[in-house]
Image (cartoon, rainbow, N blue to C red):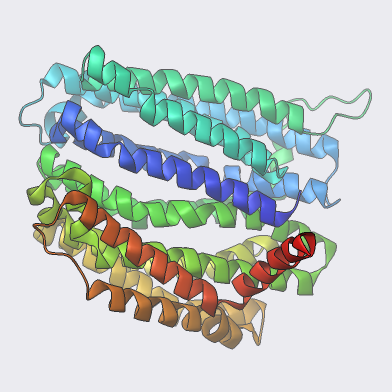
Length: 505
């Protein structure tokens, strides 16, 4: 299975899942209302905070399965690790769900600023969230095992199917049975149970067979060889949750639930950038870990740089389209002028910030492959110390726009001040080529094209189809300009063109 095919499959499924989740939001708002949709955003935020229980174990599973494939681990050692991780995941998931259930009354009555929904509906919704979140989090263990085994194509198709059920399957219930939060989250719980059961079955079938006469058992000692790496990842994951979810947590307390729904809408759309580029990293990390285990350094760096250019093209086209066309997009998409006016500045700020973040993730992939996250931990510690108090103050005093300004500024600061130190440590001589050749030229071409198209923005009174078409035009032109400026994309296009030309001759 080629890396390109894995990336394409993963990217296609994430594009589909992102689009279906975003495109159906106006229907959720129509049938459920903004306040009930605020609960959906609260649900997504709680899922992110629940991941703190992971303590770095999910990425560790993916890496260890990849190392088994690279010959650095035997089948018995892999199964022993998986068994003890299953015990931990199921135990921690149960404890986390119980804690959220017990706190549901306080969340419904004291934390959330509910104005019109019945308290009984909000309470039941939070309790169902607790169960669904625990099941979805536990499923991450088996998804990680499949990722490490590079069963990316199957996993991508499965994720797309689950996304269809999760986002689209609930609509008939909302339309014909009842548009209540209780019904919505009961359905999400059912889909989470189906997802977990199927992933367990498939992961078991994809892992190696134990040697004859050997049993994996439940040995905590199996954690010892990976504990240091896992805890390093745990810190990184905790920092990720803190820096990406603190604003949402604070605003869920500060804003009325309906306004929080609008904020959630803007951040969800902007989050599509990370969702679209994340699959490239998900496919890239196990491949890089395998190449590092084999000692193929030049091949590893070549893969790293090509993937960087692809992410820059994707991130720039989407981020610039969302930032330059924020209000036309929201107006054409929802038909709600008030929502578009309120959410557009938030969307633009988070879109650019997420575009930078998508590219800034690459030095982490390099450190992950080499199994040395010390510098990454230091950088994240500095980042979180600066970000958390700043974003709390900004979100409390200036709402979503304040949080967006901080998000953009901190990501830009990290990108220009910290990442060069990482490259100098792990790959001396790479930094200049990476910034200038793999990023700057592509980003400049994309930005210039996007700005030129933005000068032709239609008036706000234009039909909704015109508004959406304008945003699509920005994305198309920016993507084409970035692709033409990328040597990796041009080389790939030539590779596809030659066989096609040979077949027609």
